[in-house]
Length: 143
Image 1 (cartoon, helix red, strand yellow):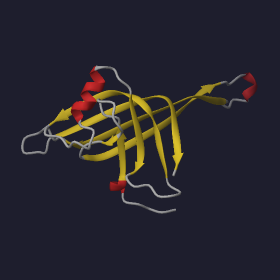
Image 2 (tube, rainbow, N blue to C red):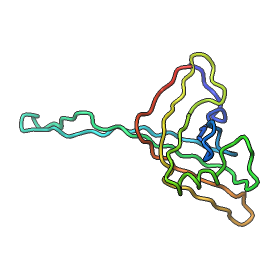
Image 3 (cartoon, one colour):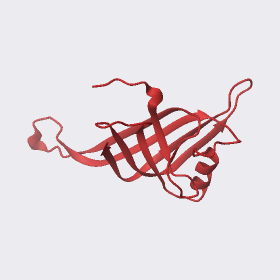
């Protein structure tokens, strides 16, 4: 198992113009959360122990970054995320290494932007934060 620098982990998202996925502008952190619900099927025959079966699976993503109102043409910018959120447009994404090698893998899927925050404190760098709630299947892709 190879250990790598977290700086190499990126989130690419489809831009609002429908073009190819591009990395989120000036991101400082990215996160993918995968969850599985359980269904309680305990009965009087469970001898006092809880019995479970698998339920629905879900996933969400989040990212933080530095805000740049001028933007970078090759990156997906917060204004594009805003457009997709306001238009209720699903985004496609890929979560993985910036330059995956043979044997690595990525996660891909689609989701809806559920939160977008832009902030700037006094004498502080302006930042953005975005949350994406997954819809449909999350896919693990081998390289």
